[in-house]
Image (cartoon, rainbow, N blue to C red; front, side, top):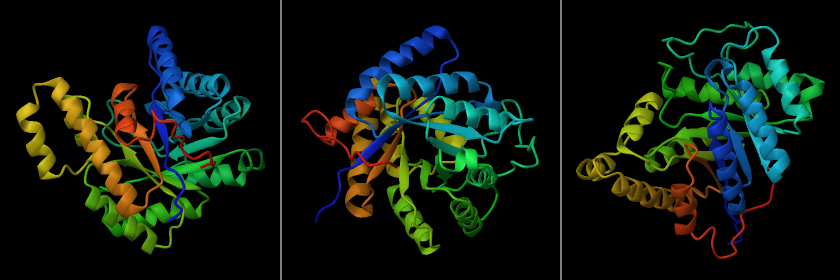
Length: 299
């Protein structure tokens, strides 16, 4: 069986302070030696960190020569903000956009469109594909939600239709929201494929860093947590090191199953700007540390 080597991407968010920004650059430089296929940079809710997002993505692309994916959201995109961001990305040599609707701005309970042209992620995808200036420049990804979208009170069928609409609008690949239920994920992939969606699906993987952050993030994302994970975490919840070690083992086992049973080639690591757990997961999989190199192909 001649399967191509696995690849992986690392997601970072731009810190608000100059010191944090500088610390993160050092971390990205250290993690660049793991040969990620791409580095992905988030866009703040309401575009609050947009300049830092562009700066970070541009630096990563220019300094380390790693393909960079800029997240772009429809949240608070008054006036020409989308064009400004796309022109900025192009000027920085960025060729990859992850098109998202985005979260409601901080303090707001519901998401409200600020530009009638950009209500859904599919509108953003269609816009990039329809403008000659952007159509050839950008490879476009969209988000998939194996556990359902936290803001959408809709059934799974409607959710799959929404995903198909984003792909039909011109998306090249899907990156999923983080999850911990591998069976549920593989089941969801089968349903996505049954809808006629053929583009690559890259699962979002988040190593557990602390009990509190795990609970906060999974609640925010509406993530299903298998009972055996809750049972394993409960007795060690006050021991940060044990939680981290468990998180690493869990990710290694999840990825092994996804690779073997789901034939999943690529993995998107939500790093939370931390390097140790991701490094230990990659070492545990023997994807780094012994001259292993992931695939060199473009997304």
